[in-house]
Length: 266
Image 1 (tube, one colour):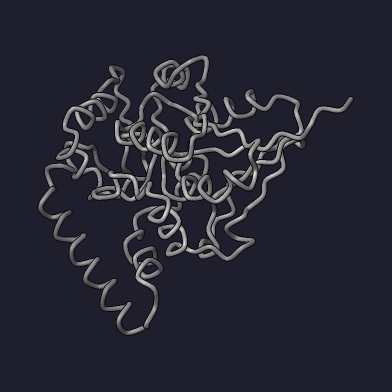
Image 2 (cartoon, rainbow, N blue to C red; image 1 turned 120 degrees about the horizontal axis):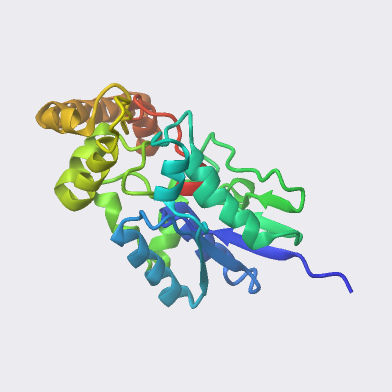
């Protein structure tokens, strides 16, 4: 007798995957929810996952690499992950997911919205087939927020100072978010600095291109002012173009970064 196709939904600790869980948990009662845990997450991320479990009555499987971040950092010779070398995604997110699925046929539900341009992580394993309910049904950012508010789950608390989920040292953070990390979680900021300073052979690896975190935090006031000006420009563009604020902010405030990794940030 053939095994039934598995239905899986990866939670990142962010708003989109959470809203997708809200949408799908009654539609697909057999859904398996999972979270790829790097053990370098914010406390707020775990709190949000707990809120999801309580509100929806779902079970979340926490997946981890057999070897943690520090092991793989040593394997890669101290090379910090970056947009061009995202070994953290491969080793700590994708590998645990593919081990979780194994050779089973699985449908993977991905929370990319209809108003996003990114395509998401597509497994190279032929037995994992992605589907995109938000894109197929026209759910945009406003619809995602509405789903979360109506469910009583709401938005993750870290969105008050950060625009994405993911590790506390995520290299896709905006510079102003590094500044905010230093304010909200000075202990975690200090740990991120320590990773930069852990080299004894003359090499220099930094989380942000072109400067260390200590250099960045030395420009704290300048970075805050630059961000305030960018937000003001975004509001002006919105008013002139009559465009949705989320779209304008994405175009105006993300000038220093690429789209984040979908395996981490949905």
